[in-house]
Each structure stands twice: as C-alpha cells, then as structure tokens.
Image (cartoon, rainbow, N blue to C red; front, side, top):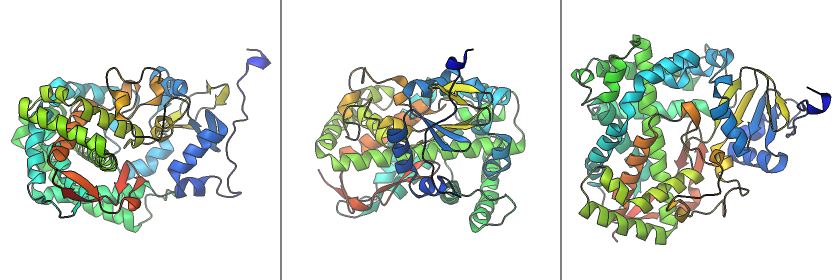
Length: 440
C-alpha cells in the first residue's frame, strides 16, 4: 500500500470539554448531539478517543452486513460492566459461535406461523384493552398499550398469559433498566446505587416468574408455545441462568419496542387528521370484510405504511454500537481495533440527503414498492445483516393490528402535545402521551 493510499487517522469531530470531552453534550441531548455531528462533520465522526459515528448508508451496510464478523457485540470491559447488570447470557448479548448456536436454536420458532398466530390473537387483546375506554375520558396511552403488548408477547411466545401480578412485576422491571441505560457514567457493579438495588430486588421476583414459566406444561408443546419450546428443548440445552436471560430479553424486547411503536404511530396520527381518517376507513373495511390473520394484514396496507413511517421518524432502536475486532477503513479513515463504532437510526432515518421532506410525516412514501432512491443503510429500524431482529415480522404484525384497532374505534386527541418528548433510553420511549378518546 502506498503512502497516498493509506487511510487517514485525523478523524473530524467535536472536541468537547477539556476534561469530559463530549460526554456532557451526549448525555444532555443524545439525539441532538448525534444529529449535529452528522450534519457538521460528515460521514465518519470522532465522538471520543475510542468512539466513532458512521452516517453513510454504505458504511452502515458494510458494518452490519458485509463486515459483521469483524465486529463484536460487546468488549470484555463492557461485559464486565453494564451487561452484567442485565442479561449477559442471552442471544442478544452473545457473540461469534456462541451467538450463532443460540440464534440457530430459536430461528425456526420465529417463522411465518408465529406471525400468523400474532395476527389471529391480537384482536382479542385489543378488545380487552379498549373495553374500559370511554369517549371523553383521558387515558395514559403508554400505560394502556404496555399492558396489552406484554400480555400479547407472553401469550404468543410462551403459551400462557402472565397473571396480572406477574404482568405488573415485569412492567415495573423495565423502568429501572431503562433508567440505568441513560446514565452517562458507568459505575462499577459493586457500587450499590439506588437504581441497581431496585433492579436486583425486582429481578429476584422476576426470576421466580420466569423459572415457573419455563417449567410450565406449555413448554412441552411446540404449537402452543413455539418460542418457549425451542428454548427449553433446543440444542444446545440452556442452563438455568441462560434460560432466564433469554426469556427476559425476549419479553422486554417484544414488549417495549412494540409498545413504543404503537404509541408513536398514534401520536403522529393524532397530529395528522387526514391520515387518521384514512386509517379509520381502511381498518373498518378490513375488520368487517377479512377474517383475523395475515389476510387482514394485507388489507391494512395504508396502516402498514403509517407504521413504517413512524418507525422511520421514531425508531425504538435509535442507536446500534459494535466493537471493532481488527483495524478497518471506513470513508477513507482508519478505524483501529478496539474502537466502538456507532450507527444511529435516528440520524440516518432523518438524513435530508436521502429522504425527501425528511422531518415530515408522509406515510405515502411507503405505498407500492416504497421509496426507490433510498439506500439500504438509510432505513434499518430492526437492524441489518445476520443480527437483524429475529421478531421483526411478528412485531410489525402486532403493531399494525393494534394501531388499526384503536383508530377504527376512536379518534385520539392529545391533551398536552407540547409535553410529548422522545426519551432515548434502551428504546426511544414516548413520554407524556396523554390522550382523550373521541367518537368518530
């Protein structure tokens, strides 16, 4: 390699504070900070001494697809830190051959039959959620949808709904974990912070619930509980702790991301009455003329476009990071081994270089074959490459049906729209969403 062809090492990026670097800017406003980095410094941005942001769609695709094997989910230091406070033995937090074996064990359970089952049972859960709603009475949409999605996830994947007490316990676990993930400073695990103590107390109770779930009769029936059966009877057979971690991450990932997607789509519909009316009309026709199942999903094409556009503007997964295991080049710059490389759905999904009216809610862009000129790495709400979300089809099916069911019955009015903000924790949570259901 000639000197002229060598990758550059002088990566551009904000210098930040003398002592804290960019830590304060990122922790204060992560979404704004990452967006400004992309707009001001280009496609490869130095965020810190050992952290780089990639914003080129081609580089996103290289990282997550072409060079996936050259990145690890987490370094040893990261594993010793925050991941030990979560679920380190799950597929989501595994790497290499270990990840491949675990993914292979679960993949068959997430086929078309699971999406079909989701489409068939989601209506009953929607009815249950909407039963106590009354026109003119305010609702906390996040709370209502979270209970629905948690019941749906447990029933769909594990054959049995949690009891009301267990549902409340798992829902309570999400809040402290989300809080922990937003802390800009990672303290040693032995430091007994209030957040960690709350998580540990809640985890002990959740452990009992999950182990009882694994021992239930449903685990023996692949038709009744396909995911649970695949885990309990899979090869390799999971240890007790591994099984706990797998169940916990499946529940939390399926519950939190679907919940956030439904709420964000509803917020956008509440702000765009013409789109809401179109969803209502389409849903009325689909529910009246099509039996529950994937055929109804096909009849909800505009609602599906609304959900895809909501995932563009407010993807629950807003940030994806990997650790480089060897030296690599991106955009003419050297990325040394050990560097944490980050891509952001929030940044790329709103990049005006690739999206027309990037900040506008335009479901129509997804009708037909979708936007033709948008590069693959500009839209990846469920990830890309081998580690793409295993439950993407199921989550989309659930979200579309729940949104259609809500909006065919009620027009939602936002009580304090100015207070609704995105909270970038482990997922991009919609905060302050209070609504008043109105009759059409």
